[in-house]
Length: 492
Image (cartoon, rainbow, N blue to C red; front, side, top):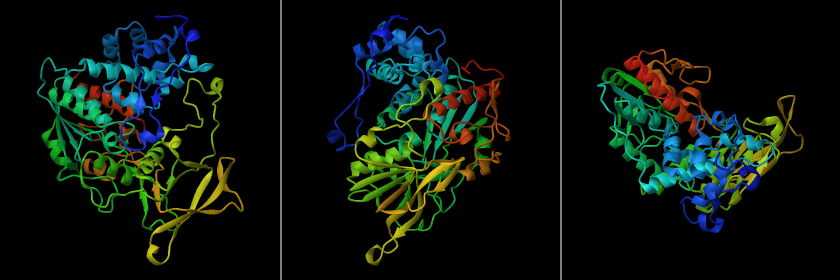
């Protein structure tokens, strides 16, 4: 490494944030990235550890020690080449990935991990600024055609890899813009959508065709899934028109909370709330937008989606925001010798929490309460109970029931499966969780029980991270390429 003793000389440096009062006034990104000198110092902390566990901690197997060393030496152009060799979209992961690589960092055993995510962020932002990110055109065209269904990170990664292999790729997206949950699930203050737009421009220059506003197979009539499609195409048409079809839609079926009062107005899935704000931020006019202005907001679910609801509600001007988590509060500091190099359970406080939020742990919702008079049929409160976990079972704490005021309830308890009508339309077998059944092993895979139909990303593995989606998209691209050509030069 560039500086063998760097990890003993330098402390971890976190990226900065704009003040809360400033960032709550808009939906723009507020993270202050590392400058070149700061990134060099942080890269110097990377140890010559022999076995870089960070590589395996990263789902796309980023070659982390190498690009750290290149940044330390000031060779930023080669640093982005190394980063791009495993990750198509480091501007996405450098902003919204939770960085399992840092949990696996050898330095994290008894010290603060190297700020890998912040270095990645700095590399890709500099690469765009310097004009180093250019279209990569294939040396030859194969004459093979591929349909990718779903323009989220898995579909985008697969489409880019397949286009670079020389195939003609068409991406179908039911919503009006490309990006999937990156576009309509991640708030702009975490990732502005210009990052998606310039990748789309690059991919179009590489030959990828995007058809937005086209749904493949119809959604159920009572579906709450975001759908701005204006036309449809059947699975049979896709199978007839293309040499291969890759299904990369998201796990869009939200987990519901079927307790008394669920039918009251003012109770919504997070994915009814978040996409609307992103659409408005894009300049679209939207009638009947869900708003938190002046309301007491209850967010049920303690994960990232719930945190995104907190940040968006605060920007709306909510009167109060409270977030529920069913599990007990985790420790503030993990037991590193016990958990390393795996992802630890510990209390994680997001930037949205810091902007204003009451967090309630070990709490369950028993009933949604409605009002009288002008509030009849509307949610006005949530009846809760404290819970304990005994022998792996949840037990209510006697006498702990209480009622919290609520004008807007957002259900952010995760996602259970992809849209069944899409998989059923293709005749794809499903696993016990309702995901597309497509076995993955060392030799490749990703092929379903239906001839020439493949599946990857959340549609195959269930709700997961953006970095897992990119990995699956890249690996599925290799599997499709091998299926069409008999062999593949794409990375595994």
